[in-house]
Image 1: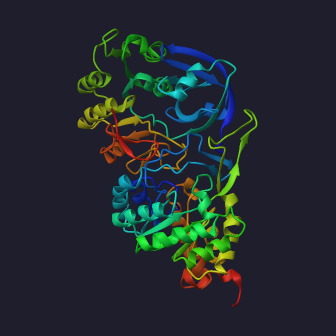
Image 2: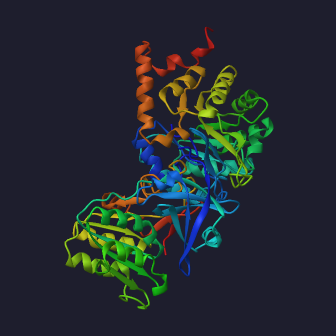
Length: 285
Length: 265
């Protein structure tokens, strides 16, 4: 799957991802009103293949995004609209509008690490309330994307499951920062951002592994997938599907390369489906 | 190359026109840029914007005052520091034997390294440079020297220098009268769009360097998309095939910072 935040600002780019082999696409996070996001710089590579970003949730608003969803749907793969809001009713409103526009599922971004909505993903109560409000508003599946910037991500995941979430997406970026030593200033205009890419992968794998032991609903992994072996690692930890974000740096062909690599891995080991290896790193029973 | 800003010191500045200034700096990566590539230029505490590379020895950008960031760049002097990421983008593909190069306004900045390369390769190069007024014509001397003054035509909106017509109208006439096998352009998008239509009618391939609002500059965020293409990665130079693909938006619509479509004036 294409992860949220990468390329998914336009229907045509989402459609291109679908045509290039993505099994599903997740849009950029959409809110109730248009937002321009933070000033540049808002994305920088800190370590090779690891990125720091603070975009500030730029999006054209729920009303103009409906037509982008319709374009994306032409790709014939599920379109998951990432949504955010300032409070649970706003989440519910955006989710319901996106369902009307044809979204196959919504992913609740309760975890952007550098915007005001981050606080929702850090509180069990707010996650519960948000999921419940959205559950009342839509029939389509609800993904909840979780934030690793918490004491215990498992508690939040359990809360989301109890409140009616259908899928857990793990994880969003980790709060991070970069300071330029020449100008002695933070590089990002927002100063603090979220770290994605290679550096995030071991943290994401750990989160998927821990959540898998405590929830029954499917987990979709996100974090540092550049190569098929990274996707397999997440699946062994317990993910049923894998999202690719920063990994798109090498181009759209990454979807087909990863799918082919997983297939070969399964064949070589005599497995018939991905399902057979989900979570097997946890051992017998 | 890690895509983070490299802090560079400005070693030379030159006022090109009342609104356009060139800044040169030393940077090994930018010195290797191909004609048509761009840099993300960081003005600490203000903004980071994409800028065409107008020269490589030493690397140089040429900036017209159009907003907060470009005005800040115009205020910089020798010794000041900026951050640069890149070079990014595909750049021009130098093909054709008898070619026409059409630049409007500050768009000429992206074309200067291309004209230099084409001249060096011994191509038959005609150039049209357009601007609002004579004092805003950019790089006339430099380009005249490269291709010969008889191969350079200027035009201005107010007729204060050269022909009193738009660069695209003048170039369209030249396309009809000559046997060009390649057209290159950079300038206001409406001008480029007209030129593309004129060239496409005669099946002459064209390469146009586009500009869009950018956040990352290297293909991750999607902010700069036109149709299903990314101006930062698939562009900034789009060929006729690409332009046909995005014709619904080319010269008409662009995405703003929020990602919403807005009309190009």
